[in-house]
Each structure stands twice: as C-alpha cells, then as structure tokens.
Length: 476
Image (cartoon, rainbow, N blue to C red; front, top):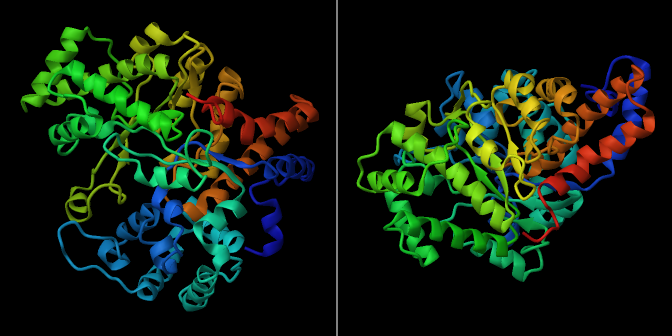
C-alpha cells in the first residue's frame, strides 16, 4: 500500500466524512495509551533486556501468525514454536523469517497483516513491502533497530505513549517481576505496570492439574485449602497481594457465561467432590458458575473490577495441544448465551454501585441481542471491546453500530489490546481509534451528533473511559 494512503487508513471513502474523521482521530492520537487488559510478560519490562531477533519477537510467539500457517500445512516446529513433547524445532531466526515471508500472501485482508505492516512501519521505520524477495532486507532492517538502545522494552514503552499497562497473572504467581518493577518505580498501586488477578487455574476443575494447583495455592497464600472456606480465604489473601502489586481488576476466562448463586453447603459439596477427583463436567461447570458470583462478592469488599471472557473452546486442536501446549492457536470460539446465564449474578449485584463487571464476547451476534440491552439496563455491567477472533476493523465497526443504540458509548469500557505482542500495542490502539473516528464522523455527517460532542466522545473512548471503568489510578 502506498505511504500516502496510510494517513487515511480505515477512514471513510466519502471526502467530507474523511475530513471529519481526520480531525477526530487527531484528538484521539494525542491521548496516552491505557492498556487495562493484556498478556505481556512482566519480565520483559522488569529485566529490560534487548529483544531477540525479529523472528523470535514477531513470529514465534504470535499464535495469530502460526495458526494461519498451520492451516496451510506449515508445522509450528518449523516456525520455532517450542514443543512440549521434546521434539526438535527450528531455532534459526532468519530461516523462520524466510518461511514466514514465503507465506505472507496468506495474510491478505487479515488484521494480522494490518498489525504487522503497521508495526514494521510505525515501530521500526521499515516501509519495504514484505515478500519472499525482500525477506532478508526487512529482517536485517528490524534486527538493526533491535540492536539500538532506543528499542529496549522500557524505551519503547515511553515512545509508545503508554500510561498504564496491565499484565495478567495467576494466583500462584509470586509476583516477583512486579516487585522488581515496583522497586524500580514502575509498578505497585498507581504504577505504570500493574498486574491482573486471573484465577482460572485454581477455579476450573477441568484445568490440568487443578487439585495440585489448589495445593500450591495453599502454599503461596498461607491458608489451608483443605476446605472450601479455606479455599475462599486463600483466594482473598492472594487478591490482597495482587492489589498491593497494583491490580485494579480480576479476569475470568470461563467456557460459558453461566453464573450460579449456590448456598455455602452446596458449593462446599462441589469443592469436596472435585478434590476427591469425583467431579464430572456438570460439576465443574456449576462450580465455575458459582465462583463468578463468589468473586463478585469479593469485589464488593476489595473493589477489583471483574472481567469475564467466555466463549473459547480451549485446545480444540488436540494434536497442537499435545505437541506444543496451551495458547499456541488451538482455541476456537463457540456460541455463548448471556441473558439467562448472567441472571443470578445480576439479580444479586447488578445494581450495586460497588461492582463493576466488564463482559466480553467471541459471539458478535450477542452484541445487539443480549449484551447491549443488558449493559443499558444494569449499573454494574459494561461492554468490553471486541477481542481475539473479533479484534479486527470490521468487527470494531460492527460493534459500534450494534451496541450504541441500546448501550450508548458510556456503557462500554474502551479498547483493550489483549495481546502478548508488546510491539503491536500502539498499532492495535491506533486501529481502534481510527475506527471510532470514522464511526463518529458518520454520525456528525448524518447530523446525529454535533462536532464538539464527537470530539469529546472520541477522547473519552480512547482515554477517559478505560481509565474510569478499570479504576486506573484509583486504589482498590
């Protein structure tokens, strides 16, 4: 794509709306980045070491990339993805990069192509179009940048304009990396890098090694998890530690959005059954559903914002999971129901001002049918941005078109990048800001919104709303 067209990337083709979008985008582009949900390894910033070669940085850990190539027969081992079964994998960065470039055509029209091209151009200053013929040229240009001090993680953090970055850890994490960041003046409450409490591996009985994880929870918390009451105390203790490390939210990645408000005796019976190894799939689902309500109760006390990310069938590609483990591209979205599933939690706490619940979906058909009306009807509920398989310009547009009529702008929670790819963070936020600018420009052109209101709204969407909803800068 010619450089001249990048100025109007994702803006309307109609000249009047395009001019409005430029003006609105200019306001959003000035705002710092608030990244309230993501999966960047905190060690990256705690240690501040130079990045590895371009392939290890941009290809090997990016399951958006590796799953696309797998769909065309390129095995993850050929792209350097570590193997849990001990089988050999490619380790030469240039070889991996060339193999990736040979298949660059597979990404035409995908958000991965957009993010990568913008990362090459905006982060590394490389405008050469990638192809098999230019693979070495692009690789060498990026490698040269990575050798410069200005491209160390903390220096890039500054250049990206990130105000706050939230990482995600399990209750079993000792938070040592966050302690290092706090000691360096980067972490802790009010810090620039904060953690997020993600308890799936001790709540989901179907998670591998669940019972052993619960035993480890006892060790790190100092509480006896032999009983359900002790289990709850251990979780509360770990939440306290996460809040001390700067956490303002928890995150829950359940298969469904089901919630149940069981009695203490019923919950304890399920817990005991799971600890004995006798729980079936229905028991595991009931326990997960109950724990969402239990975590809502904990949030009333400690103030953590709840995030719910349901709808991913994990490890659907069983061969990929057996060979390379979790989180390497083997997950698939499923249809997800919210209206009835969330009713027990919303009946109990949906109108309680102490609770903030941000709900996401991988099922965009629920935007207008269920989620927008729910967010428009309960004080506690906010809509999270499209994520994962839906994190694309097309769905971001459809999201605004689908939810604004029922939920408005101010029952949404702003953009989250949800990424492990540190260098793509500014690119992903830029795409979301451009899409919002285009949508608001259309409303102005249709005389549905005044220009000054659109200007205020785009700054709210880009900066003020995520900061407010996720309580960034507010001690939990």
